[in-house]
Image (cartoon, rainbow, N blue to C red):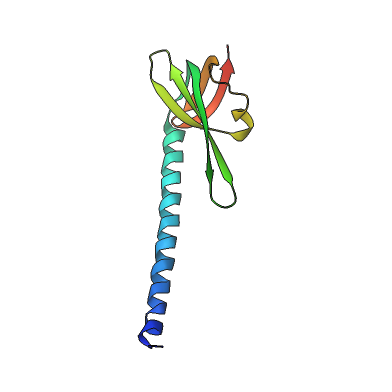
Length: 111
């Protein structure tokens, strides 16, 4: 077997490792910025209606993320990630008061 294949292996290994490490760091930085932005946003409570729900399954370990879309009286819509323990209580068509902070779901109280 040609020796040049083995000479490039350490370089390729380092490049793949560096790329994976870079993706992880970028993801952590993005999550940190979003969290900081949410922390600095005002808490808003507004009348809204649950118009749709969806789930997103990721990876081999079947990590599920839950989302709900809310429509305000103005017609504007907002999709928020919802904790799994509250997702089942939301029903499409429910109307009530949505409390959120930036892109962070805080509470929904049916009226």
